Length: 263
Image 1 (cartoon, rainbow, N blue to C red):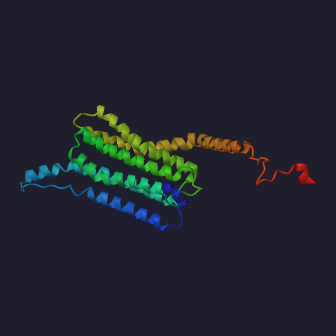
Image 2 (image 1 turned 90 degrees about the horizontal axis):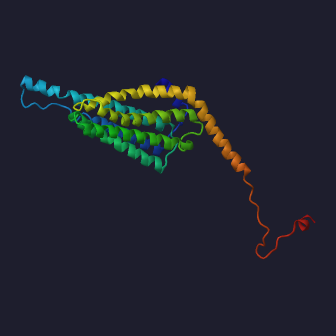
Image 3 (image 1 turned 135 degrees about the vertical axis):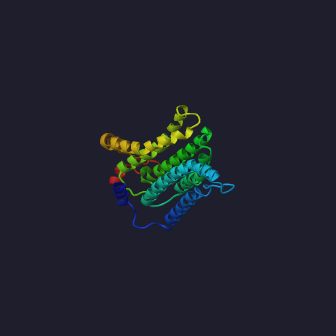
């Protein structure tokens, strides 16, 4: 975590524009409201003070509490990812702002899916809805990163391409794992579809493993391919003949022969 922070800190602008600060504050507000709404409907409502009924009501808080914690950690990870992105973004455009609103729409929807999963965790359709929300939010986060860093559109030109590539791969793994976990619905017991949520713990391990593989085996070939394509584009531009003006009359004046010009 500290190493990743050091990597990004070298490319953080000294000052942010007012527009960037306003977008950051909007994102923080949506995240804070979403986290707060997660716990509003968690509680017990026993009809009387009968200890048996209170104990039964408390037992019903187990699943909502578990999925509250899962959703809280998910939202916290998205907030950290968005914070890292906004730190390296130097300016904004309409495309980035629109993608940010799409991303925040998924964040604001988490309290709804979390409550559904806490109350109906034994229903496969609810698990699919919750997982689809996670996948959509992850794809939106990936789109934001790719849009901002594509050809260094919104970030500093000296942001290393290696850092951009490794971050892109890590962000791509999240929605792929979420979508792939739905296949486990054919394996887990029909009355316990929520068990597929435990497969999401693989995200941290796969991200580290993929980063290790990329840095040690794929980084050099990818950089060579990028440089080769860049050099090929430059050579193609150099090989194009320069446009010459035709020897045609202009405003009724005929072109003067080269010998006459020299004389």
